[in-house]
Length: 428
Image (cartoon, rainbow, N blue to C red; front, side, top):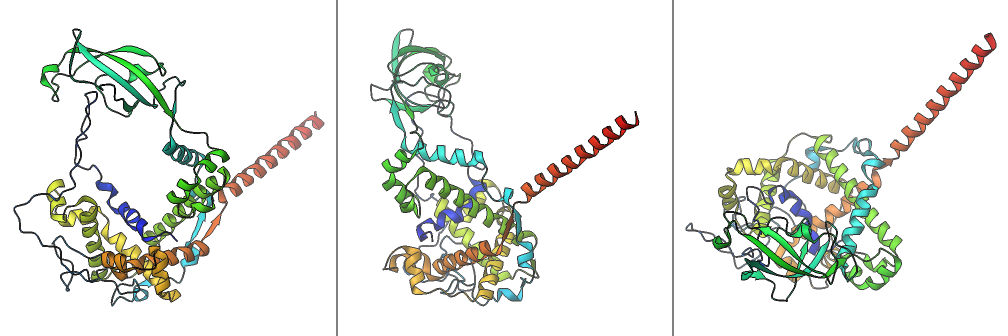
């Protein structure tokens, strides 16, 4: 079971549609000039805001339901076993044909070859090693030094001062085609790169529209190690820390299987939840369930963006109802209701031992203080339901069956054609 420290990552999927929404990407066009760090301080406001309560009891500050304030508790509306309080989900959800609905094609569940290779490439790139021989290609990560001059005179901010800077061709944004001119060179080479500053150039208006020459030295090219058993052996400690269950990965094939299984489970759960949204019969989504879902969205806004829903509404120009509709609150609440219905049907109960396993500690006090028992218990409960549904679902190699049918049909057609040709020859 994944530990509680991974829970926020799972829930952030509901907010991904807003990442970067309504914002212009900053263009870092000047060499050796780093982008400004994003402040994590709470935004200033003239409006009166609700202070954080001293207690972290698992209730919302407003006992009658979510408010429009900043502070909500993760366990709002949940009892200590993770169920929504006073909600009997089976009163609203029909699970009578659930097994019939959970039939999927293997091709819709297993990761394809491209996904596997991209994931392995991404993983090995975490352990980049310097190469002093590789010729630079588009997409390479390169460490360089440079000094820029205009009419032969060095200008302020146009040099790395021998400290080196790492850039990625085609990703890092520099002026003109600065980085593209590195392609074809290799470590140890020193050469000139010619560029023209944009006009206007807001970072330094004195440079606007001017031609410049940068003397560039390539220090090294970062390369990912070969994916092999030797690579796994060299990084077993990091793999064990990075992946839940990573301590059992000893070979390249073990890691490949780990990645395959992770995507298989993730895709299967996604397909199950698609069935929940579109096919499982739900007579009604109680208003209280919608309220609990909305409350979670609000605390996620504050946890992830460090702003209230009101701040988000003002920033993106939505009213709150539009914002909640964009986040698909109703379908999220529907899926949560069905998860609980399955848990009720199975009679799932969360024990103290479950809390210890979920938090990875013997003393759960700090986690319960931060999240409340209900939130942690719901995480455990949903995990058990997901395991049950994984076993209940049928994944069939339908694509392969279809291919076999096509081959058989083609063989029959060929045989029929041969018989016709033989008959014609006999007639002749």
